Image (cartoon, rainbow, N blue to C red; front, side, top):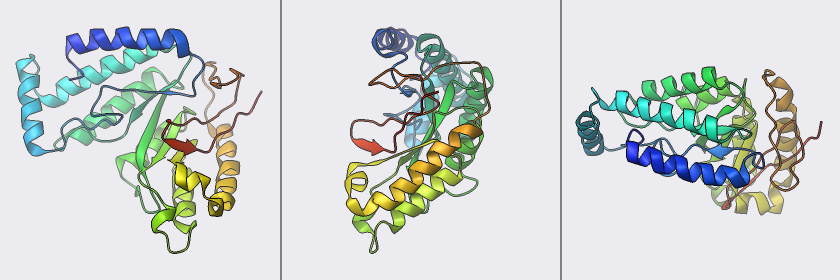
Length: 251
């Protein structure tokens, strides 16, 4: 659980070791510990939420939302003090059903206000018809992308494989993400490598490069390319099992 003191101590120790080697060489680091895997989902089933609620109260908190927010606030502060030269991003998936969206928004408000320009967001549900206006993964990206370049989308699934007229769905998805303010979009390797995708990827690349100028300037915090550590206006990286639209624009 993110509020567990034993977890916090061990997780900070590991992050310090990673940052000693990689800080300043990555486009961003994903804030892990708020929920399952790389997302912020903590208890997605009613029985899981009940169990998490009991754990929170056993730890001295009044309820699960309070405990989760306390733990995620600690995580945000820890990533900020450990990853000095690298933006860190929080996933937009609500942690639990009842009250989860409000708790999630509170943490994005805290991160954006406290570490503006260093605190980013990533939503993992981009498709040709997702997200929709009003959903957290749309509204949060709209807000945070105004202040931090490390804000964007990871695709929720493969696009070309079930498209009767590829790359129509891929193009629609890329357009949707950019429309919500994304500065990066991470896609699956088969979509990225498919030659039919080239026109929509080229167009999206040009548009993503253009988004950098819309970020409100903040105190200088270089983001460096993992390969050449060159100073950059903005660039995009990708987990090992995905491909993304990537660029590095030197000052």
